[in-house]
Image (tube, rainbow, N blue to C red; front, side, top):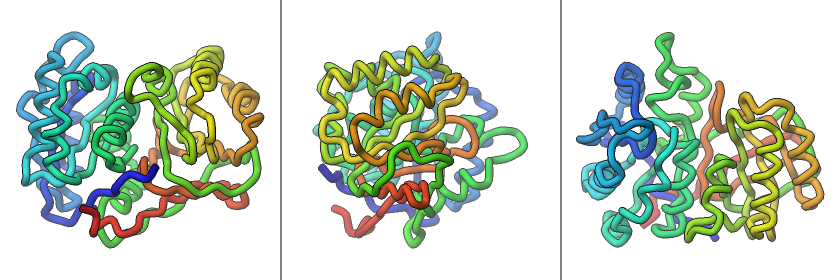
Length: 305
């Protein structure tokens, strides 16, 4: 299923930063905010963005309210999640999805724990969303400045009049070419969403997988869970991103995924680490194993309803 791709951004547009998951480092957020304003955007902050409750950026109701208020603000063209961590999945039953749908097509940006929101926005709103770097994380907000390739790719992904370049990996696990809408994200979150109304169904899709800080046996367990849940049934291909601090995970990825008989490219700089490129989930992508690349296809985005 293809999701609608929201209108892309133009200089002067207003974007809202919210914290639906973990608590923020204020200095990083201010640096990341400046990076976005330097792109020509008007950046506003959710009113509760600096709230903290243990490992969460405030109570669930407060984080859900910030997200919904930002999305439903008619002046806001995109909602950008400041960081991941944990907690986005706890918001899904607190959001008024009818109100969100009435607010129209906008861009959601985030990665890692924000995978839960990507799945929910696709299911509830029918919208394509951007899996990419976040403004209170190292890639965009380290003191020495944003990682230039990551920022450049985010810019071409978000802004009208630009075409994102292909993302190149470092190895082909299974040859072929696949075209189809993208789905997926962080493997831990995809496994955690199994059995919920938002679980991933990959039929007809190219699946993006990445993770951080997970031992190979845990990667194995999560891939097994998804396979046994039927999540990979009908998959068209796999785009494997970064596996930072996951040990020697490639053998288990090969063992579990190659038997599915679809094209697989690995080593794509998507997910965690640096550089960190961006991809539209819900919009078409192309896996080409001759060039070991993933290309996102954006078409008619600025005419989307």
